[in-house]
Image (cartoon, rainbow, N blue to C red; front, top):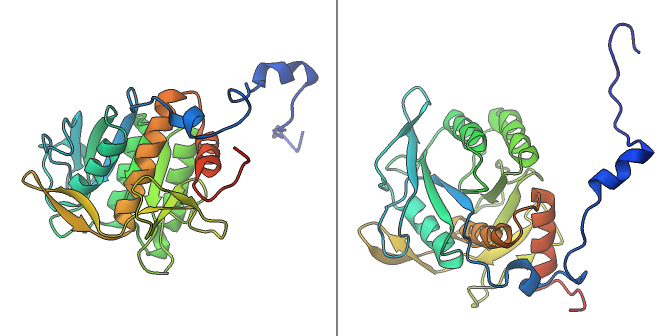
Length: 270
C-alpha cells in the first residue's frame, strides 16, 4: 500500500505460467508458406481510412461498409464513392494481394485530399471500437499538437489487436502516426517485383514495399500509375490480411515479427 492507494504489480505467480503458454509456429520455422500459404484474406476486415472507396471498381469489387465524418466529427454512413481517388487506389492494392478480405471504407479526406488532425484522431478511435482487423492509413500529419492524442489512439489499437499500417511521409520530416512503434510503418522501394517487401534495420521506417510507378485503380473503373509511400502501405496491409486470414490468433506484435522473418532481405536459414 502507498497511502490509501493500491500499487499494481506486473508479475506472474508460478501457477499462472501454464495459462499463457504460446504454441510454437508449425515446424518452428517461419517462412512464406507458414505465414500465408493458401490464404486469401477471407474473414479479415480491412478498413481503408482515406478519401472513400469506389464500390464495384473492377480492381476493388465489393465494399462492405462506407462511412465518413460529418461536420461534428461523428461517423455516419456515406455512399461508397471516392471524392479524390486516393482511397480507391489503396483499396485496389489491398484487394489484389488479399482478394477475399472484407474492405470497409472510412472517408476522412476531402476532394483535395486534405483532412484535419482532429478528424484523423476521431476516425482512428472510432475504427478501433469497430474491431477492424487491419487499418490502412496512407496519410499522416506533421502537426506536433496531435502527437499525443494520436499515440494514445495507436496504443488503443495495439492493445485491442487492431493492426494500423501507416505510411511514412514522402519527405524526411517528422509526421504521425507512422513514427509510433505501435504501428507498422511503411516506405517505398524501387524493386521491380510487386511481391517483394523489405525490412529496414535502420528505423524509424520499418518496412519497404513497392511504391514507384505502381498501377492502381482510378475512379470511374480505370487505372493509373502513381508513386509514393501511400501506395507501398496497402501492399503491407494486404500481406497482414493474408497472415491474419491464416493465423487469426496472432497479436500485432506477432504479425510484425512474421513480416520481419518473411521479408526478402532477412536471412533466416530457410
